[in-house]
Image (cartoon, rainbow, N blue to C red; front, top):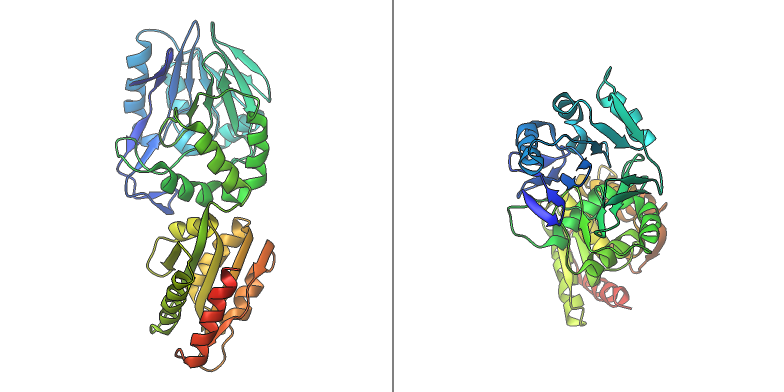
Length: 385
């Protein structure tokens, strides 16, 4: 149990059993499933948690509320890591009113077939829930990153309950930098919905926010302008860091040689940051976050079955799925008898918006030759223009 502020308490849990979040994202430092209690004339529990931690979560709640009843269970988001224990909770506190959006109640019937809360309160944009000396104001946040999502704002304490927004990978009993894992989380899970995030940031602008309580990651109560600014950059597909990120696959080392030569040339020309990513060996989600972090990237790969190497294919698909835009892209292709990688990469990227393609495209025939070395020098200059 941790006091967030005055009558608001943290009652979430840490999960160190998990290896892949959503069956996809590597989480070496586990995950936090956050839940909160507001203790007023009325008692409100803010969200449930993942299915396996019901007993620990319930114990945390009882430590805060003692023998009091729970008046409201507020459901901001119906993804199972936040909603799996709704039914279990209502078996312990059957008279609790469940507060959620209309779409959330529809999803609830899908996740719990044949079950319906005895007491329901449907809320929408700007609705207010009085708790006593506090009141919750609801803010619609559709497609961040599911359609039923709501935020809520505790007006007297200036606390924003932000669902999955401003969350990150990692349990709360592990010390680590916020931005890296929050960025990987954002672009992995929310990144496609930049337009919707921008819309919600505009809604939040009039509110005085002192504390952000997300459903994953730490409670944010200092330097909030920093977090809000990063979310604005990420959701507008802006440039967070000046420099060049290079993403490559290499079969026999020749494409890697070209990449390292390009890195060397960029550094010689004064590029302060050059991030090199081997797509076959590094966490794909880390690579995706690097692509969004920098404004200029280079894609280097081999022709493979007249297409491109599988890891580059996966990487480009990840960018396209997340509406990658507003960036500058250069290319290095390799092929021994029928090089097609450059053409294929451009075709896969063609639906992206506001992309500037840089010439020359470096064309390697098997191994790097003197002509390629000159092309690499020209590509480095062009990337820094």
